[in-house]
Image (cartoon, rainbow over all chains, first blue to last red; front, side, top):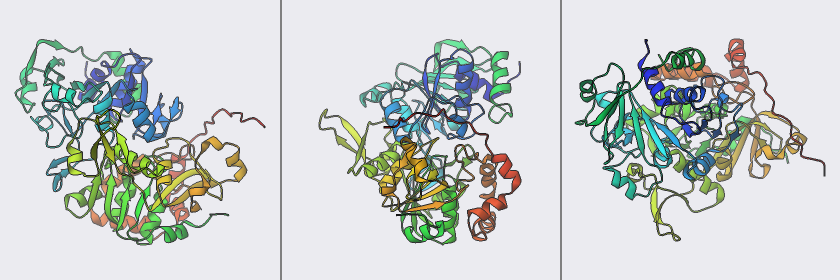
Length: 252
Length: 300
């Protein structure tokens, strides 16, 4: 069956969610992944958007993080201060989704700047909510296309924390979240090893270890029990194409 | 006492050259018509603060009103980059100060509550505090653990767009609440723009919905469709095609200049702007009603 890279990533991200999870959703592919999970194996998923919406049931594809469709039919709406403090800081969020221009060997993310901070070569949007999501959500997942420039050995600027230089260093800070549990790309799933180093855990159909290594900026370790992901099912693709993103804005 | 006045008058009175301005609204209720009035009145050297600068601060920067931006996410929401702000920063032409969303709104929360700082739990990411010395650490006196603290943000002027207000400035908002209430309480002066000015009785029939009370408001302006190209919940939809179009317009300075002339300088007010947008846009942005179930406050 034919599917796009975006569809493959979305389906694999959706499968990481558990029924009953409270998930902090971002717009774009994470939004599709969460809505797909809710329509398949996780009907009791509670979707929270950083704009301050709890229990959203978007009737159309939200095109921005504050789309009015998120509000109509939601269970609650609150201020931004409340969403970040009562929900995220207090520990009421199970899962956060993250992206970013660069992800390094220990899952740290740069979404701020390429080059010197004061004299930026490329100025990126900055943290938004991602610094707190990465710190405080119980589990974090990262979605990103697999390209070498996106996976440097070390990021210049840590916008949101992975495991810093190793798992012990993150734990020492006392931060409540467990950090990134998986990076879903169009080639594979990376997961942290016991030291927090992102390593190859599962290959998507058709992808090879060599291909993944070539597109990663550090000498990538491969887990002993390398898994193979199941291809997207016709049901998953039908929901994505017909119900969630009928105009193909994100999945094409 | 009525606080009703024109937006021209409100901007002229409360927005000064050099003011610290917070034009609030997280994607929703962004007060574009007030920004356009500020551009028309050629205000200069403004420090503009918003969690998400959005197109509103891109436009004001292009028009030469801005010398510094304070923000936490500088993107064109759902589209990509804010080209004008980004290139001004990359070229070293604009001062900036940056937080995470929570850091930014914690500053407003401290400002709104009259506190000297606001504590936050740490996030393990330390790069931002290394480049922004307003983000500091101190010891929690109760647990001896470290917390992050940020100082209050107290804008000279906050501009808040709302669904409805009475002539005294009691203002009601529903839908995404963003940081409107915090910005209003933190600010020295508050300008309300409203889709509708309603009788005081309407406000008093549903007091739980009042986010901003008259006592902190300086001016109330009737400005229907003020939030376009963003939206007002229940009144009109977000004009996503315009957000995409701005991405193209803002590729060249010449096109931006032309756009500002056609849609800001050459127009008198929002009414002319809305008419100029035309019937096709009005139809496209129209939303069907979906009413909440009425609640019973009881007669006592």
